[in-house]
Image (tube, rainbow over all chains, first blue to last red):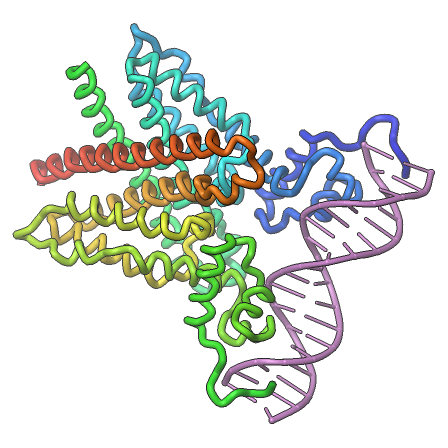
Length: 216
Length: 216
DNA sequence: GTCTATATAGCGATAGAC
DNA sequence: GTCTATCGCTATATAGAC
């Protein structure tokens, strides 16, 4: 085949298909050849739309980050200073997005890369905190702290995929019920640790917020 | 060469050399052939001591985790209930260990794997918290929460290696001073976010601790 | 039972034809 | 913009020397 009239591939279609493949079979299943097959083209064709494979994975991660809701930060202002609820809602939305794509989570770890949605998110958080009364420099610190917690919680909870995926255990594990219970227990621990950690962190940040307000 | 009288390789020597190589040239530099060359043997020889490459990387990560100090948890008891200082010291030791091996940090993300030192650490934290008066179930939650924060902070700060490694910038970047300043600024933000987040989290956990003490 | 030698299948990526 | 062909590389399996 030579050059088609209309492109067979677009960057978006590649990213979409890659995410579907990651969700279905894990990160390791994404090779350029396999992905190309899935798209009905030959492997090297991808390189007309994507610089490297790392670039592609970066884009897939960014697509998942794009699913995180950040609208709650726009409502914050001198009148509505409930930054605490905003951070809480954001954190839960973040976790929900990662839970929907557990197999991509390890790729979160590979440096910041060039991720537009990550920047949009950082900007929204920073802007919201400043609008709610945090000093600019402190807002950067708080946003970074929250990012630490959210990244760590996502990796700690979902990096290995879902162990509750019973189909995986069914073949390898004879004591299916037991494995299933262990997985459920682990999920309860993760959910508790997330909620307790989040609320504790917010409690601690509120102490700091008041301290700064009294001093300033 | 045939079988030598004394083994040329041991699992520990392989892991040590792999860590040295990771520190010097990054994770990507570790291939079985390269590592074998470094050890003075042929590539496939490694597989007598290591199951797969993933198994090896897992062991290297565990070796780094072994550098984290956990002795502070042994001192905790019904008399000395300063769990807060223990968690703080542990957290700083954890961060120091990761800062010493920034290139291995992304490998933290690949699921728990089989890491004896990770288990030893979890056990020490849990035991210390219980000794200091935390209910057992809460101790699990708190330990997990702390792990989230520490993992996230390590990845957020060191996952891309140290951008302040001036030698890297020297070739690629003409405005060396500027890059250097940006890197220093990023490091200050990371240090601030770590300390503020840690102290805020501890503040929040103390509120919870008192709440539980009053209720129980 | 530890190492070497050889071999395989698959990888990311490039060059050049159309 | 997609193709074919191909390069150098990888992890890893297997067979056999000692």
